[in-house]
Image 1 (cartoon, rainbow, N blue to C red):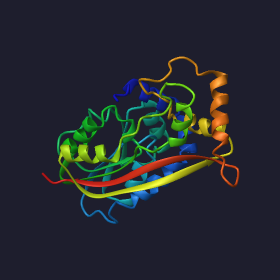
Image 2 (cartoon, rainbow, N blue to C red; image 1 turned 90 degrees about the vertical axis):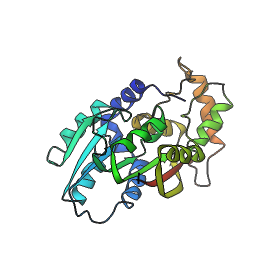
Image 3 (spheres, helix red, strand yellow; image 1 turned 45 degrees about the vertical axis):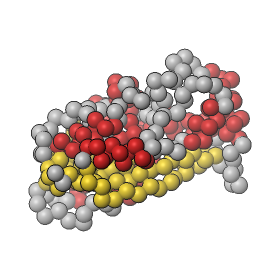
Image 4 (tube, rainbow, N blue to C red; image 1 turned 180 degrees about the vertical axis):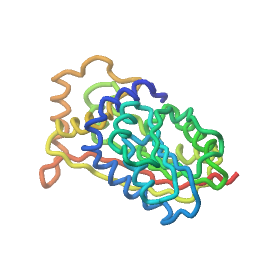
Length: 264
């Protein structure tokens, strides 16, 4: 599945003011991902935060290491602009509006690439991985998290009973991700799969969070018209069957944490 990059940029650009407030899963995953980074950094280094959003983790990394420059890159210009204004006092963080498949950096110029829950939005993942490989120095490290197949499975299951359109993003299988990493020549040092569940009081609250995150359905086989009140009511009715013992509705995510190196 090849996604429309302009649609991705527009979707997250519109969510710029709400994204950071509702990015609960993103923060949980991001904090765990930060733990894969070394405790110290002895030499001056260049770090790229790929799909940085407003740059919160680029800033965190810059504050963690006193001798690095963090390049916060994102395809959505409003995210870069908002981040630059929000963290104007962070001199070692540079915001760059860029396509992850065509990064404006020389080959072998970067020591570390950090990417938190962005890769699932890649238009063509193997191209993005190849670009990360290109910009990394020999022995450079790529630390990432990505949503994989099994994420949003409740929504996918319920919508499948309502119509034949694709209402949910199509997530990569773990086997395909590992194959892509191998094809690009990354040396896999660590892969960990974790499951998370967000709980909501209502289907509306669930859908509203996805909207505020900018995680709109941009699947090529989506319904280009309005889904309508009737279909939303069908979605709500289907979700009611999933209420747990404390009366809340689940939404599942499967996350891969990866630590890979460029060795050749």
